[in-house]
Length: 105
Image 1 (spheres, rainbow, N blue to C red):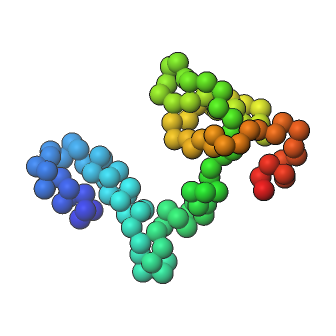
Image 2 (cartoon, rainbow, N blue to C red; image 1 turned 60 degrees about the vertical axis):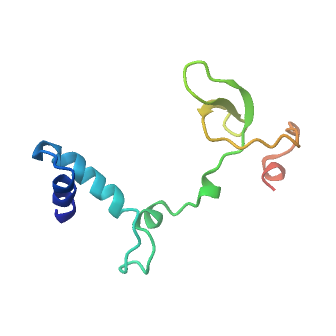
Image 3 (cartoon, rainbow, N blue to C red; image 1 turned 180 degrees about the horizontal axis):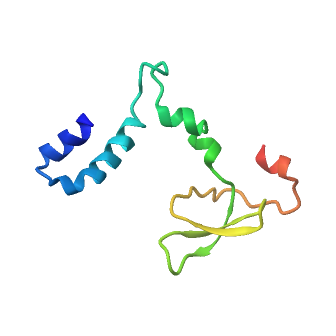
C-alpha cells in the first residue's frame, strides 16, 4: 500500500488512479529480486523459462497487412502467426525433409 500511495502522491494524481498505481506496483515488485528467494526475481520463479527457451523456430512467409510484424510459419504446428520481434538467419535454408530432432540440433 505504501508504494501505491507514494506513486499517487509524487505524481499528484487523484485517488481514482489507485487501481493503476496498484497495477504498476505489482508489476514492479514481481520484477525486483528479493531476499526470500535468494536474490532471484519472483517472475522468473513462476515462469521458469529463459528467453532462449521461449523462442520459436519458424519460416518467414510474408509481411502482415493488418498488424505491424511478420507472418511466420511454424512447421511443427502447421500454423502461421504474426510476430514483431524476429531474428532472421539468412545464411541457411529450411530443410523440409528433416525430422524435428534434426532441425532443433
